[in-house]
Image 1 (cartoon, rainbow, N blue to C red):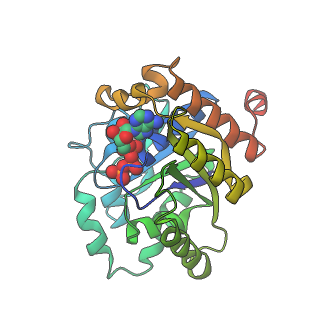
Image 2: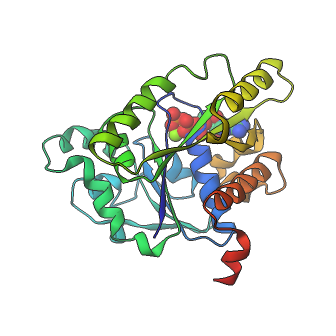
Amino acid sequence: MARILAIANQKGGVGKTTTAVNLACALAQEGRRVLLVDLDPQGNATMGAGVEKRTAMPTAYQVLLEEADIPASRLRSQRGGFDVIPSNRELAGGEVEMVDMESREYRLKTELAKVAEEYDFVLIDCAPTLNLLTVNAFTAADAVLIPMQCEYYALEGLTDLVATIKKVKVRLNPNIEIDGLLRVMYDPRSTLAQQVAMELKSHFGDKVFDTVIPRNVRLAEAPSHGLPGVVYDPASKGAQAYLELAREVLQRYGMTAASAAAN
Ligand code: ATP
Ligand code: MG
């Protein structure tokens, strides 16, 4: 059964997509079968995986509106080594069109159940909102991974996010957990970043991944080449950090690289 992780934070530009694409690729390099679902009309995860969003069809939009199913909508990120459910701007209208659907919060969950046996991980890249698309992700997910920048306002907005996750837990998905907080775009030369990073760890403890993703220009350059940073420059500090994160994720779930080799 696939472990389903929603990568979410309603703050924009905090590194959700970079984390989704690079963790997908890093887990694939650890021998894991990965599906990346792009649930953001911006389609950045699609492009970052090397899939052309403008011509992609069907997409997450058709999947959510029951016009296509997930098995028929998968594309391959050739260089990334994982599968992708693409998305593009069409999905922006999907949220409104779904409102009248029966079981609208469960659309993604129902579809993912069809391929759960084919993957070890499903990563869902969420848009910077807490709308019905994100609720679909939370309803389907085992856990939410929250990328956070180590800045003064890091915790602002976390309250709303946690409240939404709690509501989903009560109404739609009792299994959902926050797992965990990921410190990203870290600048080790900044005293403030060091302080915030330490405070996050002391306040949230085990909920915070030990791995810290540094600010690294190679991660930012990679999408323009249609490549995950992990492939674009494997030796870069950013790529190395995402590989380390993948190993930490596998360890958390008792799925070490050694057991992958044995499978
Ligand atoms: P949105 O809310 O718009 O979906 P996001 O949370 O998905 O944004 P990203 O698109 O991953 O955020 O990142 C925002 C910008 O920061 C991008 O230009 C990305 O290339 C850059 N970026 C992300 N992580 C890093 C990093 N560790 N080092 C340097 N640049 C980064
Ligand atoms: Mg994004």
